[in-house]
Amino acid sequence: MNLKRVIVFVLTVIIMLSGCSFNQNQSQQSGKTSDKVPNRIISLMPSNTEILYELGLGKHVVGVSTVDDYPKDVREKTQFDAMKLNKESLIKAQPDLILAHESQKASQGKVLKSLEHSGIHVVYVKDAHSIKDMYESFAQIGKVTHKEREAQALIKETQANIDKITKQTKKKKTNPNVFIEIASEPEIYSVGQKTFMDDMLTQLHAKNVFHDQQAWPTVSKEQIIQKNPDVMITTSGVSTKAYQQLVAQRGGFNKVNAVKNNRIIALNDDVLSRPGPRIDEAMQQLSDAIYEK
Image (cartoon, rainbow, N blue to C red):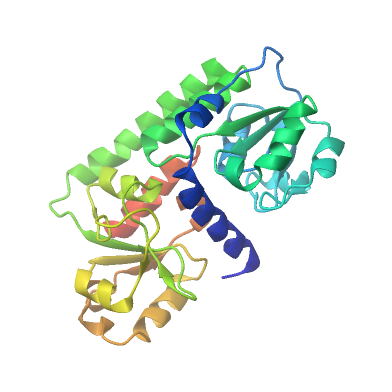
């Protein structure tokens, strides 16, 4: 994986690990609203940045994380290392709202709390473990930015787009067993239950072969072979050809249905793994890969 994808992967694991540690009071604090309409916003998570842009707030975004890359003009914004926040750099950008992720309350809480004491409004957006949770993130961000009407419109539009896709997959006669590989080295990581990707597979009437495990499990080659997936998908940043070559080098995989039927595919991680406005595009890509459009 390149450096950017390593950072994204580490962030994902941090989110999963730290998300379990929040108590009820912390969760209640994540949606607090200021009466002041924000004019200068810093977003520390790519999915939240995309939501802000979709709500028409792109011109008010003055800072993003180092792994933000969409829409294109975010690359021109001031960047901040979300894994190692610097108070002085953040204050220099003069934000009146910082959108953090709830996981950062554990990993970067000291800096963020200090910023709150400096008078900056900090909001922790809840982690989305499902598509329903994602809609709640839309609503939460809409509320704190005083864009509630736009957020509700975005939710309805996204729901309609996803419904069209899932209705098509419901007509399929099969429910393929799918393996998703989010990292290949140094260990193989997949997706388990209570994750955004697991819910996407469920909505598409496919079966996640590691649904019996939690969050983002490390899995062995032997476990994958035993699960015998019909489709193997990677979001690790390699091409389909490169992933096919990698799988071919793994001993014993010639017996796996996905290998025998050449159903080994690479998809865009930036689209697939972000619980944001491009979810309908992600669902379509995933559906096409699973059902071989």
